[in-house]
Image (cartoon, rainbow over all chains, first blue to last red):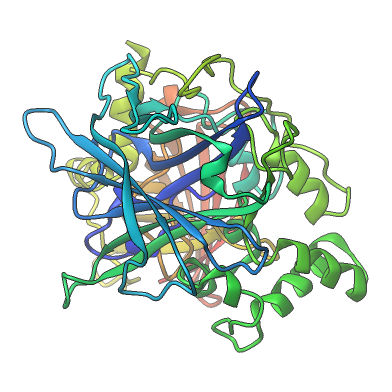
Length: 335
Length: 154
């Protein structure tokens, strides 16, 4: 629901939850302000629809280090085909210059982690990076850390405090790294995306899903606009046209006026904060959402209050109790 | 045991619901057809949440009812994806198979029935279901989590 089950590819005959992003988290490592944790979760309701990472896909975390909504750093996660119940991951870091284009992978990649085994069981297999920078990596089957009364939302915001995600699982990708790998400027913007081979040009990739802050696409975009938004680069999100013609910035503004009763000026101001859809993060701060996002941050309560202008302040659901106290922080899967 | 039940239920709510419906004798038809032989077939859907909120999922109610014997089966599912981009992925816990026990009316048809598996019911949700098909308006009223919602006939 944060971004669960919204990928345009899911509406195609070849629906693929393996590249459906559920959530992005970015937070200062507890007890160590010199390090950052990045988490990208995919595959909602796992393992019902898929029990692996997609081997021809690229999972990517993008970092904007200079505030222009154009990525400067990419962390890329690739996986081998699953054979004999095993899958291996490779992680690279690339420095980018300029806008990313659909179909192409940019930047010279340097390996961070090699041949890291994916965890399919309850125990989290943590791998070390190839350098001396103390990088840690995890990929595998985990408890979904997201919490929300989804049924209350579907029922017209009639919340009952029932956490739909309390017993759900995802496939998680977690990276612990020293802050310097995010650049010198502690104020960064982060988003994630999944890339899959183009049908007619398998040597090229196209974007399947994208996410910055939670529930933005879900809550603000109607119909076909959800799919357009999923493939629009953040730098273009304010000015990009929706299916009906107005820009996304105009649509977000209208939505805030309708749902929250905001004045046009206030609505525009909030819309300009929400777009581009990037998770802003000061890695020198241990604060949570809207500074990055920690597993326990009640992002839905914050966004409900914002969208409804304080008329609805929460869904009555709180954080899960199964988060781990150490890396990879994601709880053991429900089996 | 609870987890196994949940897993089974997820399958039922998703792709498995088609098989479950077939096993229950429910043709998954898309169109409302005439009643020459006293058989009513319909499919109706609508976005959840309802307007003005953007839809995240699609509520689909469909079934076949013999109007002469006042019997039949109707399924109710919630599929991920907004109307127009609905997936085959059912949201777990929201699939219902309804056994029809009463069917009355002509232009507007009022169906009454019962949810077969009461273990699926959520707090406050009645096993007794009423579905109203208003053919002139192309609207079906069906229950969702204890309240009636309007769906559009396909």
